Length: 305
Image (cartoon, rainbow, N blue to C red):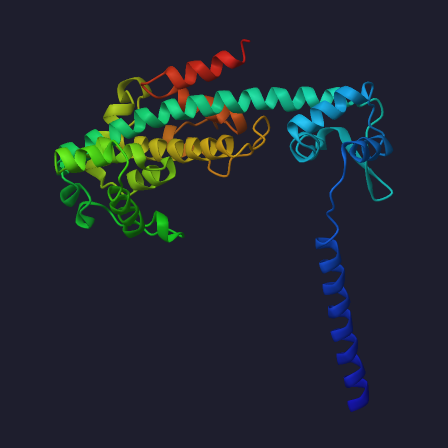
């Protein structure tokens, strides 16, 4: 009986070692390939390449991973365990989709930066009005809610630490205000803060500061919302915009992006009928609700081109 158990244990150990060895080999399989080898591989996967010279130029300019791996999925199927392109799919189709998405991503980035500047100014005004312009006052822990967060850097303590660290710099405009005025007001400090930090900072505002923020960025009479619903709208919208901004900044695929954050439409608008917004339409919808319409119109304009 003992010998049988030993054999089983040995078999389990050997199986585990074999799986680990295959995993290590798989991790080691990525190798450099020349442009010619990349073209050869694509052809072997049934992709039509009418102009190899143009294809090599595109691969050299945009990169195989960016151009092929990021945009091939709508055009591929699995045949005998291998990824193959559908019949009639050409290299030019992948390039067209890549360029469409790249232009969309650039438009999203421009709109998000525009919105970011507006939100930073509104938040700075709320903070200065509520707590003053000296960092010792507006970065006081007791002024905020201290909501729990999964990541330390987005806790209230982490955010305030990040902001205080940003004050210790020799770069303008913070350095100029430190040396010339002895005070760095929030509208200057916030210029040097990541949008993700600021959004999570706003999430730490107490109700009175959130309501003041709402009055600056929304028209509640037009939206027919109470402050409770508007607070949900504001925070859901800011987290969605933050996610798209980060996606665009890091070159992520945009046209079919499924945002992890979502708008609690039924809770916010209290409609008897479900308001279905998702994907890119969700981004356009929330942008259309802000008082400041430039980000919405600039992004909407992209679809008219």
